[in-house]
Image 1 (cartoon, one colour):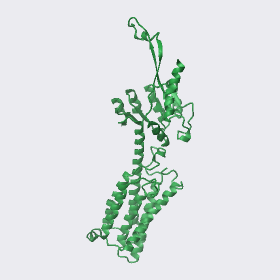
Image 2 (image 1 turned 180 degrees about the vertical axis):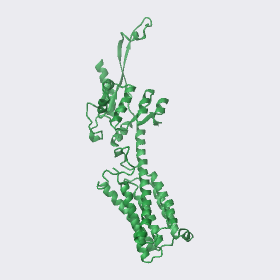
Image 3 (image 1 turned 135 degrees about the vertical axis):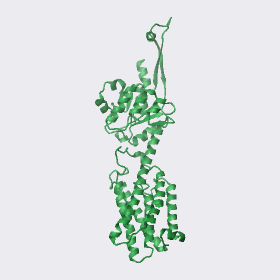
Image 4 (image 1 turned 90 degrees about the vertical axis):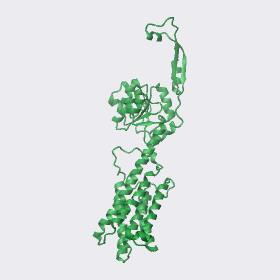
Length: 421
């Protein structure tokens, strides 16, 4: 019978033993009623995982997130379910942590109780399933993972899960079936009690972080280009290239509208195939500050080259040309930084109609400032000829082309190491 119970547990069933005993009168000690029982048989209960759970676990593994199962079930039951979900039987090639070993991947509560803190921290390197554990041991598991420098996210729904939810870096409680105590102790509450929602939240978090980096990259580079243009012109014997009204216009329109549109950029195709970033990593890591320095210098250099050429050739519209080149260069840069590594012309790059609309609207406003007579005295601009406007458009493409070349070098691994991987 014991072997039958083991076989049922190994097939993923939760096994209950049914027994009886006839009593002529209620026993004085309730515990006596559990003695001298006659076994009737075994009942197996199937609690299958949700259909989307296995795909969510697989996506976690690809994203560098190691799923760990903690349960009170029989070890054989836990092992079967973990294998069906893909938590077990994944070597390093499938994305598991380095050093994975078969045979050390399941720890039972009694085994865990026999381990001290250092031994448990070492075993936690390999363990993917903890079975027959009690609530206090859940806190030890979280502490052991944290001792190894891991960022831990703990899910739970019961009162007994609250201490572990509180101890974990991110506590995730169930909103439907969870207790009030668990929800109060958690950092996040799942309204649908679905593990796949956690994976979706990770994807969304990475998208938001990427878009923050894109916004900073765009605005800081644009401001750097303006600063270099104004700062270097006197040292080159050139007059002040831009007036205060031009700077205000660029900061309000050119920086504002496309910059805000970058915030709704969709997630990049490989966002869930990257390892988690270190918690203390700077937002300027992976070549971001180098990009802002050299692209800002390039943007300023192009504007100064246009100024030197137009001013020394006696062009009456030289200041309007510098103003236009700087504006259009920033618009091209906004399109180029939609991805840190994918080309704008790549089919893998998702659509962002908001950004395209912002760029088109900003371009229309810039043309209005140049060609609407009523706006010329306000912005101190003059209408450009077709040739001058074409020259401004061509020269402003230099920044866009340079950033596309930079991304091509990043894709080949020739720049910034693991940047934007």
